[in-house]
Length: 239
Image (cartoon, rainbow, N blue to C red; front, top):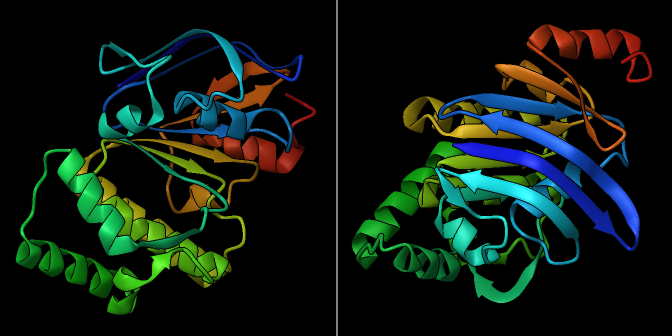
């Protein structure tokens, strides 16, 4: 699914990632852990080719080199980012954006099919149907923004999901709702998932097959879920 080879990243003459390698197969769940400021969120942005960073190395998605591909095309290829602070888009409703995106992907739904599917998703997430006609994330709380992004996830049906510290700003109940929805999506569609986090709370709901520790710009240690438990007990300094 995703193969990152010898990835190095600089921003403003500062080295952020250094010779990072990561391979995620179809249907696998991987977690990258590390303290704040080590480059975890940078990795998410670089996968989607944020041009604020200078990079070397390659990023391969389904045997296709997406290292320098335009962000919109990477999204069309099936990559979906749910980040810790979803942006607000004034003047564009969820329904308008979703219909446009589905058409761009070649998944053309007529108005009846679109409305039926969107309303079913809202009911499943216990979200008011009027969210579909609200401007994207505008004036929403942190929890509402995450749930709003889940509407997009279920409608667009991506095959590779990046969760960038989505537990940030969520209370216990909201985290459970969001995590359970993602796991339900996983069981139905079997996407690959990359979780970015600095503690293991979310990993109790979305349990990874592999855990990686990011330190000094590269992956220092990899293991199974027990590695997350070790970090929780001993901290990152002992890695």
